Image 1 (cartoon, rainbow, N blue to C red):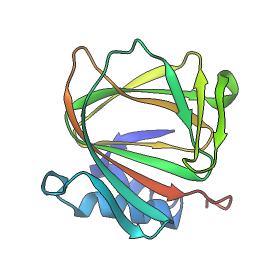
Image 2 (cartoon, rainbow, N blue to C red; image 1 turned 135 degrees about the horizontal axis):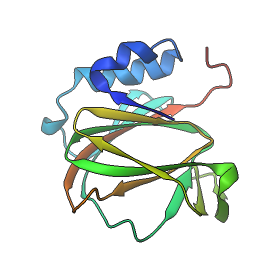
Image 3 (tube, rainbow, N blue to C red; image 1 turned 30 degrees about the horizontal axis):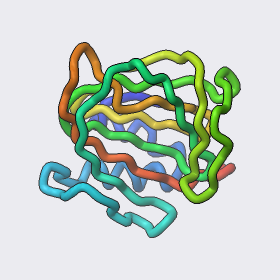
Image 4 (tube, helix red, strand yellow; image 1 turned 90 degrees about the horizontal axis):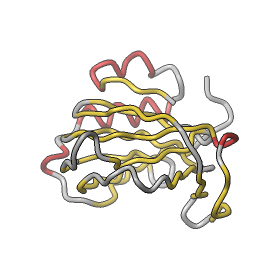
Length: 154
């Protein structure tokens, strides 16, 4: 997992060409003018999902992880807590479902606070619990860029 401000994206561009494309895309768009939905950057290799929602209390600790995609989650506006834990430290509650590239878990992890201008990169081994409220409920605009995972990250 990586967490930082988008203005520091240059520090991470040597990780992988596709992650570089994702960070460039996040830096180049005004997401306040885009409708919710999917936006292709490079077909199914890299695509963005614009989302608007209200954060929820941290009562439900349902964790998700993906095998095929890396999540680059960027908070455009608002603030939220994001849970993270290594999948080996959680108990699987729903087996991996290929169509949604998702596996669900239960257990405990740590939380970070992401406010406007911050991004978090979750790799396949990073289970995450997004959309959690920080102090109180908040309206959030977030973009999740899905980056097809490769085994040859530089």
